[in-house]
Length: 531
Image (cartoon, rainbow, N blue to C red; front, side, top):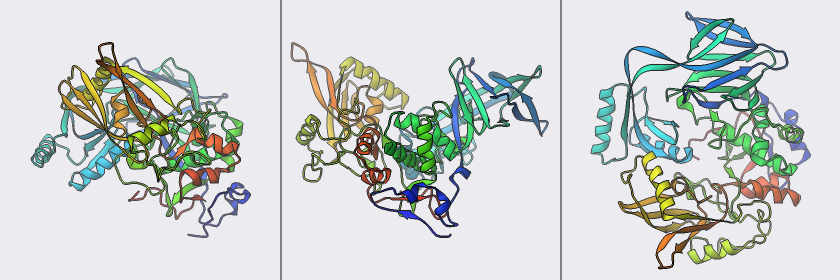
């Protein structure tokens, strides 16, 4: 394996930043790690969708298609992909079993683990929300699917359901090169300089590096995949995640954590044969659009550096604003806690003792929310503290939409009558909130609270009832703090720590206690069996 270089403690020294040339033969070249990013995930959802892909700087596109079983290369300056429909010789049944429907990949992955333990082979998909399906290539026939569903019902599982549609045509991608129209479901696009301009419909043109692939997905549409090396990928992630004006050490910390996050999460879209998306469901990625030289330099200084725990890549979660204290993994998602993701008071000198005054007590929580001095995010994040109101009618609309989307048995409610917080975690996050409706009580857990109700920016809030002149409940004001899940590094919090002179290593040690900063090497486990 060769010599490993580990960098522990509170500082990120010069030796760590000059590059991987100081490391032994076990080190990797980070630029050699290529990832597959779905940059347009649902091309063809609308019949008038178009994708225009152009070469840049006088270069030429090479479009590789399969013609008669043989690869064929077409050369052009620009190709515009349109959506067409190809009739099928006979109708086709598109069917699968949905085992669960989740708002996040993290909880979907825990659900997948549960179903595997029941003996069901599964795959995680994202047709809109995240779903766990019974694996399509295992349960291939209508009979096998119905036998499985019957078996699950007999075991007392009521949430799985069968999704069935009959298809009489399939989508194809159509384009013209050299006066000839081609209809294909797959293609690969390259250019001499590895650069492309992409325009989706009438939107802005964005520039990407690497290679492009158009391929079908599980939902009857297409995904445009960008094959790109990890360091170039980071150029399109870091400025959009941390912001163009972030201090240098915060940028370095974001770069290391974004690299770690990407490499640990390459399994997210296995069902569709790519690895990451380009949205907030993964990390925001905009290719070479909006790159910033100062941030490019930070990426180069930290090339190949990742965060590990027990020689495994950490689950490198981060959010915009913690609200003053970070959270356990299990405060937000189902699944086992990670030892390095735990509540940390988000301040250089903690103004609150989370051990002696945990925030699962409602009075303590409200007192904490009232405290607005001494925290990293004060004066930096506009969502450190917030209030957001909603009438009962507005809450009814948003909850009903959620219940329909998740095929909840209480879908079809006419009114929300009351909200009640049932349980908080020691970090203050709401673990269960009950909604009394005209059809019964809907229990919302953890991050699903944000999915089901419009106002909350996080699950770090309390409820203030709004009454009319007759002392009747008309709605609620959500009073809270933070934006996002609040687990791991606070991006706005890292701004303050960097401005105080904290190094990237010290910032990461603060938000991910007990972890190790090291260079990629062939002994690191990318995806541990146990988190």
